[in-house]
Length: 154
Ligand code: ZN
Picture 1 (cartoon, protein in one colour):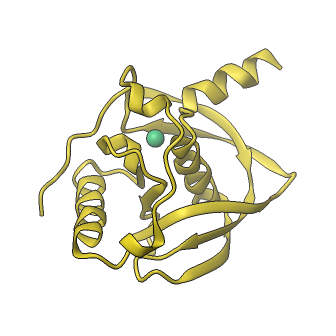
Picture 2 (cartoon, rainbow, N blue to C red):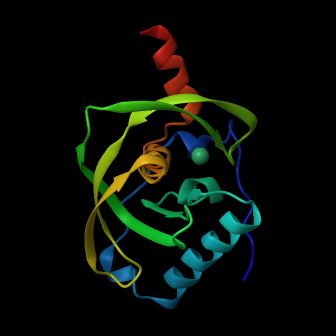
């Protein structure tokens, strides 16, 4: 499976709101291959998450692997975010060499479509919740460095 090139800060696609994926497209071979390539790319870069805009695709899709095995979430939404937050160091494959503490909700309720086209809903906690929020930000054109700026201004 081909490893895709990860775009870095400065590329306009990282600043765009990504488009919803058409549910009819999800079960196609092309789509499945695209997701497999993203997982492969995330692994080879030793990342815990990778959003479609990071490989130049303007789609609401990300992959993550925080130890339980890789998952792909399509058209994800948060239905709830905990008021309780935590500060923890983050980095980003699209912002090489930069690491800083970001405040994020401790828990998020996620709804999304799977690679099989099924609707799933689950609660993510701790580090997994953090990765969900970091990747969701990518789909809205937000980078973790923006969150640090925000924190410092308030
Ligand atoms: Zn990132």
